[in-house]
Length: 315
Image (cartoon, rainbow, N blue to C red; front, top):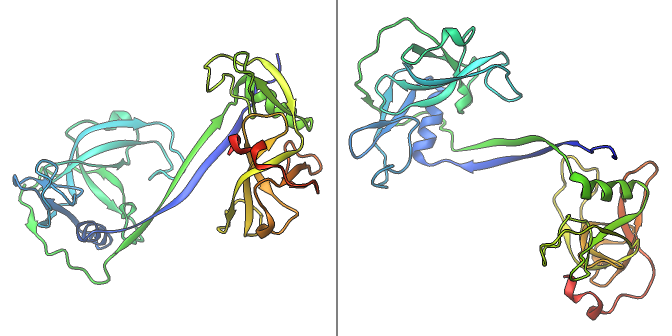
């Protein structure tokens, strides 16, 4: 049996959004060590505040201040802290109903172990030393030995100097990808500078990259077929935004390429030609760099452009 291939992959992007008056007041309040909620139509105080009533969908604007102390309503122990989490040591995820609130806030509780955490325990906010107007201004919760506070929530006008009007939240997903037998054969073929697809036994179409099954007929594809290496640009786009992890100057062209003998176009970068001269029907071939496991890009072959009818079904 061939080696099972795996690779660590990361999907990461910054998510930037503007804030409504309610969310702006909430995050600005955290910067000022003030926790705000919003009063719903039935009189309940919702923390974190929402812009619309969860029952009636009415717009909500009546802000109230609640206490920085509260009660744990439920919890789960996190034995191994991960990158980007509130604490770098084991901790508990807790739902805390702050004094004066009727709903619970999710955050981390700094505790020495799961035996030190229980539903109903009293906790208080530990504020971050430097606060910028984000949920991370609450560094975590910590145990408190006080009695439950008064449930009264004080009205607040939501006015602060220099309010926070927008946030940028990084989104990141780390995972390990295992391509499976079919795609592993395809990747191993690329390492040998060959492009290998698979043929459907029913419709006889050749799929590259192979999927293990025909998307049209739904039957397994086992027959391996070497295609290319040359192909035809079926369609393309011009990229004008530079990716942080790619050392490629913009603008550049990313294209769908129908390799000779394949019935499905794959995508790759087009190089060695000005971006504004790339066109549908352009004949291209792969360019390999020393030691690479896959083509770096495709370049023009110098052949006449392919006739449109020869690739129109692959656009």
